[in-house]
Amino acid sequence: MRVLIAHNKYRGTGGELVIAQTQAELLRRKGNDVDVFFRSNDEIGEDVSEVSVPFRAFWAQDTATEFSKVVEEFQPDVLHVHNTWVLISPAIYWVAKEHDIAVVQTLHNYRLMCPMGRFLRNGEVCEKCLGKSFAYPGVVHQCYRNSRPQTALAGGVVSAHWAVGTWKTKVDRYIVNTEFARGKFIEGGLPEQKIAVKPNFVEDRGVGEEDNKFALFVGRISEEKGLDIAIQAWRDAKISIPLRIVGDGPMENEVSDSASSLRNVEYLGRQSREEVVRLMKRASFLVFPSIWYEGMPMTILEAFSVGLPVVASDLGAMSTLVEHERTGLHFEPGNPSDLATQVRRVIENPDELQSMSEGARREYELHYTPESNYDQLMQIYEEAIESTATS
Image (cartoon, rainbow, N blue to C red; front, side, top):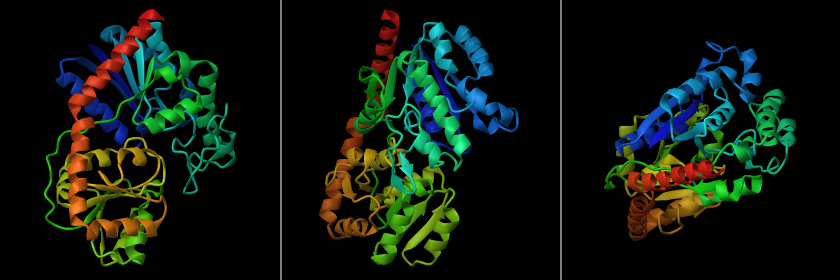
């Protein structure tokens, strides 16, 4: 099969780019012809004028022209899109359909229903824009980049493409990572029959052997990840097992200062993927205190691959990814006291921890290997091609 993968990279690093790249590698490994069409928002202010961004967010004609040439040369069976914001724009869906190409879109966030893409405002879940023809509550609250004009742009682009039928008629299949996300997108107006659930995957890292008792956090150091909740739990409850924190982001100075004032919390900063895997193999459990719904946290899948149980917020994707008492434990979102209670349970019950470790590894083997993911992906591609042929 000939597959063209399109992705608009955000500024800085991002998990969506990693997913797009690993998907391309997997498809090639399985014998498919793969080409990629990538652009980066780092171009804004350098090769692309910032003044043009509001117009190209809706329709980037230069991208459409370039993309049409790529399509004509490569002649893909399927276009698989990961992100179009902001330089690629939804124009590529229309170009693909002009060439009778099947279109698949992975929905990594909730941007079609929320300008921020996270259903999160002021540290709490917010669904005020869900089901609205235009995200005016988000504009009022300046949800996107703390700016009414930029929020209006983000919401306006989505609304305009709802109005012209892009989301319902130019995409053959949508991929979401969890049943939870599928329910939200159906509630938001996407055709139910077009939404397929397929998780992400990670390579087999091999089972770890805990040899140094500590809890581990791995992720972006930002508000939505809820790290302040974990630090408060360790501070207030005086948890004995150390918490080691890996990652970087806008709150890293605050986290570093907090960690330096606590005996049992250590901030390690950004680490290589190899070092992260090594730490996961040595840790007792992973702490995942996120306060937003999440999409499909790759950190949890990495943990499962090495048999590392997860203590996670009972919210959104985490509620379904982590099965309470089988692959980890749930705690009440945003509640450091309940997090401390669950952490103590893990510490005081080594047999239960071992059982959850084995459950985490089984969960990986059943659902998150490259092989099982590839089979699901090819089925979705075939359905998209059939839908295009009969429309």
